[in-house]
Image (cartoon, rainbow, N blue to C red; front, side):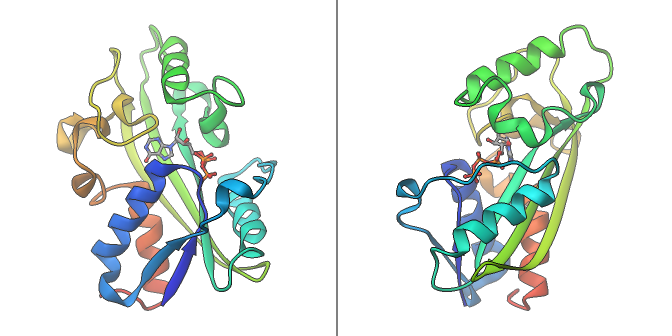
Length: 198
Ligand code: ITT
């Protein structure tokens, strides 16, 4: 089965491909919307990951000739009442990059004792403008006390310390992150629901 994937984030796309290979074997292939950069991105107006995932999947499915999924994901920090949450990609401003977002997070967490946080991923599957299903995955960790460490992954990975690995997500290869990540959990649930698991 061919599924289209709609994301403008190369870090997500790399992980999607790897996760599908891992959990879906040869029963599923992921294709990007080749022209996604030419399509005007929808405004992410939702206040929940579910709302934004559904909004993106429905919107981009108009441009695909088959089922398409999109993910809305982010980091929820307890001491910040769940922020940056759905604003994770634009925490430090509309076009802020990972470095600026990470810098702001460290500033907000300076001197804060409770550092618990989780990554959340919601994947929505849509076809011809209609949502067919939604799956959520989460993983618990802690925000590092220092400047973060590691060059693997993307986004907040260097700041996300995962106790069972004794490392941040920025320090582990993608093949290891996918064994526990929010994105894998959501995508694996979708693959199982579609009965495409190997
Ligand atoms: P698309 O909407 O085009 O998929 P995006 O990056 O704008 O790309 P989101 O709105 O879902 O996607 O924002 C997700 C942000 O959350 C992402 O930019 C990272 O900052 C953060 N994030 C999500 N998953 C992450 C992960 O596995 N590791 C590190 N940071 C992550």
